[in-house]
Image 1 (cartoon, rainbow, N blue to C red):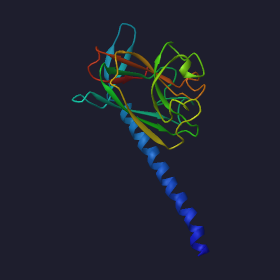
Image 2: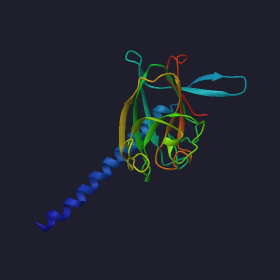
Image 3: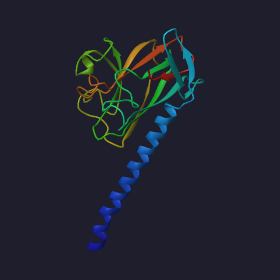
Image 4: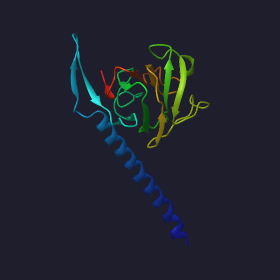
Length: 197
């Protein structure tokens, strides 16, 4: 009987490790899909940026977005980017089904913010914008709670009105440390895409 009870924790540990590796592989795959090297080049008079199409269902006006906090790149990142480098373009009136994956040991959450500043200006994201949607926490605990390493959470946001929004981690100080992206919702956007410049 004792031999069986000492084997159980080992088996549970192995299962947890297998699940964690599976979630990490899935998150990495989704990140690769999001940043796939099949961009449509567009140019302006001063620079060239790549538009990476996002998976979507135009019939029901839904874009499918995966945001991963990676172990590579800056400590406070979304899909390996920080400080607003990640720009997500969505047609006005569309909804967003977001999958949020955390690969880091620090807890993180994901908030869509109707911001009043161009960059995070306070450790508390609720002080520089209106919190519209939260994944990985709630509107009452977003400052301290998030999903742990290897966890995934999801949510459906919208439909979104035209405007410029901010995607942030709401844990105190994380957005100010670079964990934010820009979301542009516009009637001029017909197909959702992302840029990372």
